Image 1 (cartoon, rainbow, N blue to C red):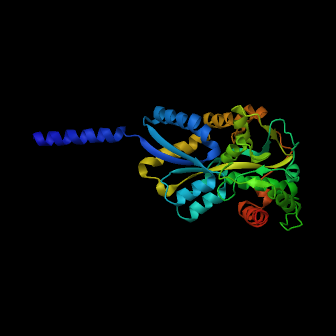
Image 2 (cartoon, one colour; image 1 turned 180 degrees about the vertical axis):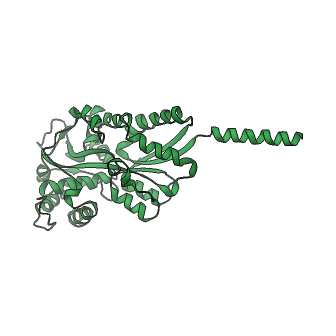
Image 3 (cartoon, rainbow, N blue to C red; image 1 turned 45 degrees about the vertical axis):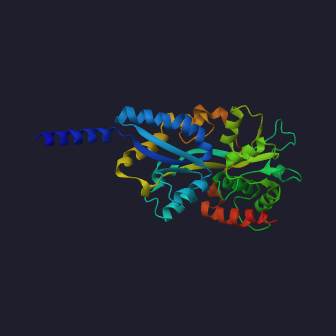
Length: 327
């Protein structure tokens, strides 16, 4: 009898201990989201989940260029959720069996935040760089990340091409004005670091006259006291970040918390947190609250105007851009 009592007490203790264990999740998110995610989003979600469901959630987060993160996930990184800047990366994860759910069924077809591509120059813009065409001038030194590891770099290349191209008649030939502009600026690129954030490290070290990058990253650096000048081209691309479950890595006890985290990122609280760090919310009401901080783009366009992600990647990056770097 005593042994039975001891056994059941031990089982009860083990059960209580198991219940007290936090739910452990891991998330991969592109490098430019690091400050908003670690300082605002994840602490707010932990509080929300504990108050609503009575359970602690322990979330580890890793940040790098989206291409790097995608490769880490393909290599076995045990993450349950990814926020990446290129939907092609999510397609690749799906093709390899890591994603089985339809991330496009999330609100806004999976987009959780937005931005636009701009460029940053030195204090007071000493070289008078205001348009993408100005970046093609002889002697101008340009930085932007590598499209092999950075989704932001892919967006930047799309932005430059689209600024020069006739979007109603895309040809991608050498006579295409978009290809000509891309080629001219490509010849002025002096470095292509791994991520959008790393371009600012090099810029701070004195390299380059301009960085082609996300508006949110420029706003964040300005908020930190950097005396950069921000140039907003008249014609540039709208960018977006997609969120997806990495279904293969989700255990039953993680399922609920993963889905709740996705839902939480679309809440007013989370969207305001992203906006605080320079992102454009996908929530229209929140975007209206913060509209004064965002640049007014006269002629915005999207990746769909370039034929969609697959066509744009093939025609603009693989064919046009990479040829400019073969020198």
